[in-house]
Image (cartoon, rainbow, N blue to C red; front, top):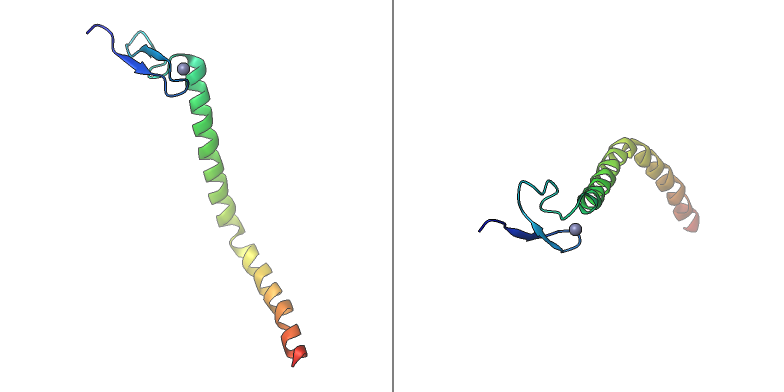
Amino acid sequence: MSSLQVRCPQCHTLSGYTTANKWRPFCSERCKMIDLGAWASDAYSIVGKAIEGDDALEQPLLDDNEQRVVGGTPSPNQH
Ligand SMILES: [Zn+2]
């Protein structure tokens, strides 16, 4: 058992899971970068949404109140 073989999570190619393979468990730098890139873009979009949500918390509430006032006006008129 000199060399353990693992499937590259990116392209599913079998590659050696050894200290010689510094991209393990990926088969190559490219596959590792693709996977890291996908993960990073996911993380960034999640962080971006969270920050946007926190920042926007107060503004949408004001907008919502305005809309409720505007939306509530027609009701008395209909009576
Ligand atoms: Zn690969």
